[in-house]
Amino acid sequence: MSNLISHPLVQAETSLKALNTLAIDSTAEFFAEASNLADVEAVREFAQTRQLPIWVLGGGSNVVMPDRVSGVVLRFVGTDYNILEQDPTSVTVEVGAGYGWHEFVLFSLAQGWFGLENLALIPGTVGAAPVQNIGAYGVEVEQFIESVLGVYLATGESFSLAHSQCDFAYRESCFKQGLDGQALITSVTFKLLKQPKVNVAYAPLNQMAAQSGVPSPLELAHWVMQVRSEKLPDPAELPNAGSFFKNPVISQAQFEALLNRFPDMPSYPHGEQVKVPAGWLIDRLGFKGRCFAQAVYVHKQQALVLVNQGGSGAQVMQAAAEIKAAVYAHYGVELEQEPRVFGRR
Ligand code: FAD
Ligand code: NAP
Image 1 (cartoon, rainbow, N blue to C red):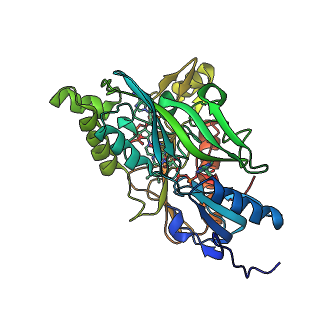
Image 2: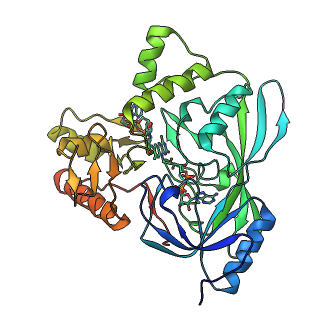
Image 3: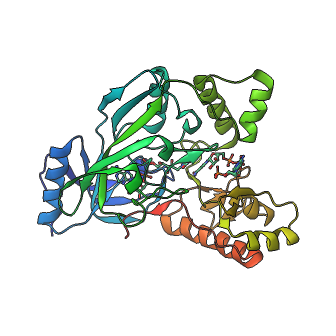
């Protein structure tokens, strides 16, 4: 079918290089941005008429792009917000999926709405936050999500899933499982606090609190931003997708066997299981700074971060596969990749 089209929302043969933080050179067969439900319906009709799949993209900070994405790449860019309810202790606010995540964290703090401070400076959009239940420094976004609203891509039917229906877990939700590729999230409803309740359990924040006293939520957000800026490469300078692997959560028995072999291995209780830092496992194998095919390398300070230096999605995946294989061979631990390969079910 010819790609010559004249459509108010859809354009053909669009580069996605600036739309993914690994800066992978990739082209979308078709690309569209939708600001509201009417736009979404128009793009759905376009895709259905041509029997094309729709692939939802947010800020591109947790995806690995192939050279070419067949079908329609759709970004929802609506940023409206609406206060649904409030009382002296909390506020319930619905926020458009296109709102930048970090911008929303700062906006909420400026309103005196608290809870999201530990999640400052995470790249991406509000709409993607529930997808992997973003988390940092002991806080997961699900703690503040009331519901997730959107549209089923196959039928155009709207949905509103309550928190209990989203199957949130550690870096998981139904949007990565049963609804993978089937749902466009158009807004998220958060219930935020009006009384500060700061969480400084993680070591860097704890150390800062020991020196400066208990921070206000806004101060805490700035601490988080400072620690992150010192430790994590900025994708604008060194293209990356954050942590490339999830921290493995293993059984107590497997953990004890590993601890016998590696007595200095850090660990954290995770329910009845144990969480082991993937970065430590990788670092110990000497991967920091390792370059693959002169195109992708392991960040020198952060073994969990793969930096792309002009490589393709396949080269990024090949580097990840080599690291996974080495970790499995040495520790018997299966690493799970965090960024999704885009445009595949
Ligand atoms: P994208 O990368 O565009 O998409 C990710 C997935 O969500 C894709 O499968 C996509 O199809 C789907 N998706 C996106 N938008 C929608 C929507 N509206 N409806 C339905 N599906 C959608 N993650 C953490 O959890 N904690 C961190 O501390 C953290 N730090 C990071 C630091 C850096 C430097 C980077 C680059 C990444 C980091 N990440 C972190 C990963 C990433 O920022 C988050 O997962 C973020 O939520 C991805 O948002 P995005 O809009 O870029 O999503
Ligand atoms: P870190 O402090 O070097 O710690 C390494 C890992 O140990 C972290 O991933 C964290 O797990 C775990 N950890 C540390 N202290 C913990 C505690 N008190 N209780 C339970 N687990 C603990 O981590 P980092 O790489 O600098 O990242 C700091 C935070 O930002 C982490 O929460 C991390 O998840 C988040 N982050 C995520 C991404 C991403 O792309 N997903 C990228 C950068 C940073 P958890 O990951 O479970 O918190």
